[in-house]
Image 1 (cartoon, rainbow, N blue to C red):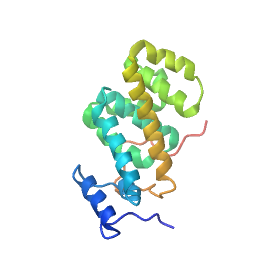
Image 2 (image 1 turned 90 degrees about the vertical axis):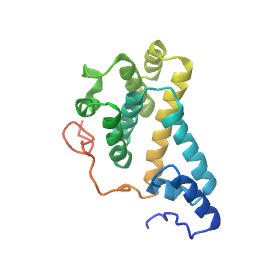
Image 3 (image 1 turned 180 degrees about the vertical axis):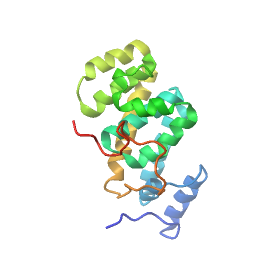
Image 4 (image 1 turned 45 degrees about the horizontal axis):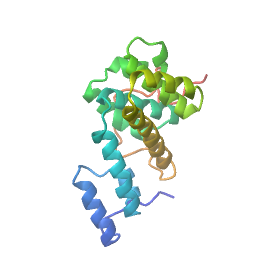
Length: 190
């Protein structure tokens, strides 16, 4: 069963929340799914706006972390959306290609490395103490909170996309770069 994507004629409250969402730009399929519960949609979008626009993390770092979360969680929907954003804000194609093996790459700054280490540790639940110690050397407390919120928020998004059946996302267009170093969007065998 395909999850219902809210339409303006579903109810006056759904129509209102879809209009609010449209003020910021095109309404994504994820936002339309969330709009079935207008309060949930508003809360999710408020958090998203803060994480993307209100925090103090550098744009490149933010997009690298989002992409790394998607690699771990096989989040092709968000990968397609954010690889374009990452390239737009200054992440290089070489960095995207190296992201799967970031720890052995020279393409990432110390702050990016610390962020990616925390991303890996948060998603896999391995090495969290060491990752937090590395973050503590390069980030202040406010940035650390924002980084943790970023990782958690995009993990939540990936978790919502599966039951909402949004794997294919808003666009049939493939991402300009594959999710993994072997050129695929399938997790490589280890």
